[in-house]
Every structure is written in C-alpha cells, then in structure tokens.
Length: 106
Image (cartoon, rainbow, N blue to C red):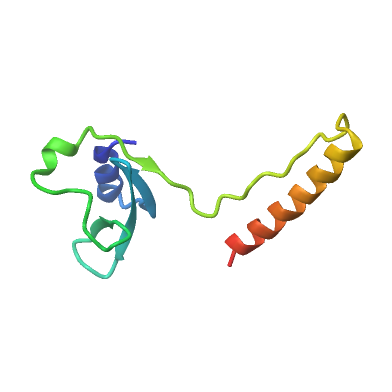
C-alpha cells in the first residue's frame, strides 16, 4: 500500500490500519475520531509523530506495510509421517502455540 492509498481511505471514510511499517519503523495510529475534520497521525513507540515530516507530496508514492494485529500462530499439521519423537515434539510445540495464541487474545 502507498501513502496516497492511506489518504484515499481517509477521503472515502474507510477505516485506517492500526499498525503500519514505514521506513523500517513500526507506527501506531492515533485515534482522533472526535476531531473534525478527522485527522490521522501515526506515532512510533516513543510517541513521536513519525510518518509525515515536511511537504506531504514527496511521500505520496512511498510504500507502507500493514501490520496485522494478533495474527494467530499456525499449528503443525500433517504429522502422520513423523517419527515417534518428532510427533511428541510437534504435539508439545502445538501446546505452546495454543498458549501463545491465548495470551495474544488478552
């Protein structure tokens, strides 16, 4: 997705991604839905406005990556051909995956 696509989402009243990656930085959307006109700002983990600094026109074609939140880790499947030890290990790994996925939902 490009920066211009984010601006088009705003113009069309669409929901913006909550977390993006821009120039190797993870940025979080500040929700200011109460403001009119609605604004959007992406901040880094330290609270610095990190997306647009200066004239926005130079950033329109820059790429941003949408980071999915709380994406579940997939379990190991098709363990039929595994050896007995590999099956035991796969089951333990799947148990750990369940625990991690459960923690992510909190």
